[in-house]
Image (cartoon, rainbow, N blue to C red; front, side, top):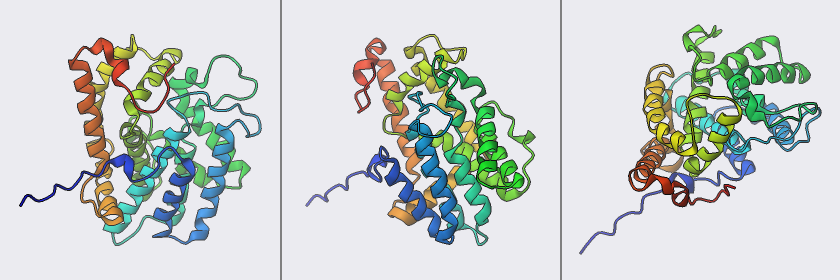
Length: 301
């Protein structure tokens, strides 16, 4: 008698990633497994302010109008860092300190606010800030921390963490104030990459990314198809970056998935590998028809 083959669990089945509220509750779940729930209140307030900001309801700012670096991109990164923190705490006697974790979560929520235009800025979209969005995000963080009574010390930690998301930033030049701050910064840099590349609609969203690059005057990409082709070499470089510059903190994902879901593997790595495998398929067989092969549920006009 043949044994029935167990169906492979898909990464996207674990959680409704298209629902920011659902994602945020999972982030809270991962947090309160290790820290007092009352410490999460400031994170919840920041998440509310983030939703208001991206929806155009935050004083002085327009709604988010970048379709790749949107609300979902941020919640993807936020969930990822919460999972890495959970995996770290499960595998280390000394957990990451509560105050630094809170700053890391807040900084992740605000790490791409540099794409948001203020009310007086009506030309184009926030994509025009692609090349300097990290420092713009740091500037927003500074104002936000001051407005909400967070200390200069906390801001410096958050600034250092956000700067870890800059792909061309030499991380060895960031003046981290301690080992735990550095670990969390590397986790944010890692989560920014894993969250977007493991997304079920990553390949479809690359069309939006090309448009952002074009408006932001990012050199080296001549068309949507050209960006898709270069994504393969980008993937190879990211594998190296995760292991070297980001010091393999992605290893904590596997520990989280084993404890949370009973799945003894890194679901991020598996999902990204599947995405790249399908991209290679697209580019090998009549690449000029790539649009017809990107069928997942976002509408590309």
